[in-house]
Length: 408
Image (cartoon, rainbow, N blue to C red; front, side, top):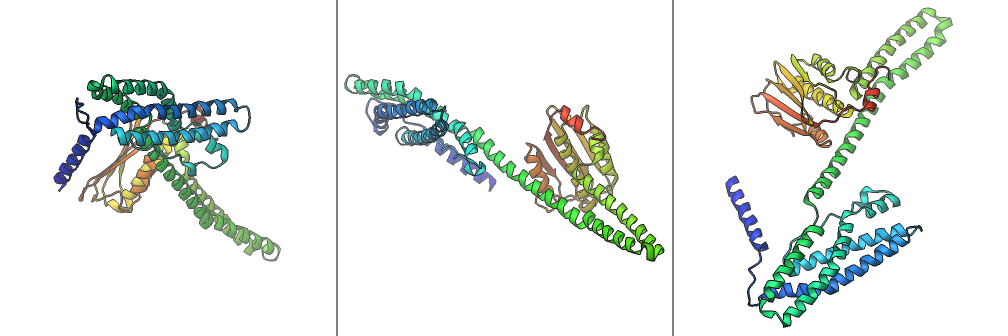
């Protein structure tokens, strides 16, 4: 089935490539040649329109930048240039057979406020590339119009070859200046998706912290305040009962402090801040229900954010080992390879771990993807399981070092 799909896909791709190939130029005029001639003759009015628009837009917008309407006019002009580019792409598709994808629209929803949208419009690369295209196209449009019109009456036997040569330059210009960058478009889409993941993750973490505070330490502190209030009332009437209440309140204080420590460890453990990944991961491994061998081979500490993500990744993976794997032993390895931080967590359990298995693997993969990381699960049924995580390495800055100093 896969082979048939691959063969079908290859056939479609081959067919698409064949459609893009133009027939060779011939002395006899065919419809492709007439389309190319029509394109070259239309170059002059199209180039004149674009050039006049661009010069007017730039001169008026730049000249009025000393006033409050200059930059908005320039931004509006760039939006209009986008529309000119759209018309040129349509003309190239119809007459030259050039299939150029439309660039992504500006992400207005992601920019709140007039000035944010204004700045986004002013630095729009698609608009500026269209401006450059219209400036270059004016002398080229005049040249191609005059050459084609003259050749139509004087050099008509070889006009198909002249038209093909001139329109090939047009095709190159359209592809270079009016087509979106595939890599840039892909990267923008990834960053927009990753931004959503980061926002959702941060919101979920805030809700978890709020819930833990409300249900744990806050409830105990409320009970503590009520108990101390009752003890104060009974202090003179029944000193023994008051002492018992104070003793009970003392126990509540200890439990509240322990819950706050556990919550703080869940946000960012002190041992990670003070001593780094080796000590922090050893601490996590000691709480695992199976023996864990920890190997951290790092000559220096990474940036605090990367270090924190690595810690919580290993912590959650070891929790999965404790809860779901049925393993007898596990291992954690951390090392640096070039500009990447690599983490490998393995166990000899029953296997069968999946990204969509409901064990938090999908959330870990999303978190790592949001920082240009990778997350790979190799867990056949029957085991063993090996999870490899990869993070970008960033050097620890002075700010990170100051924040990790004891007592800060």
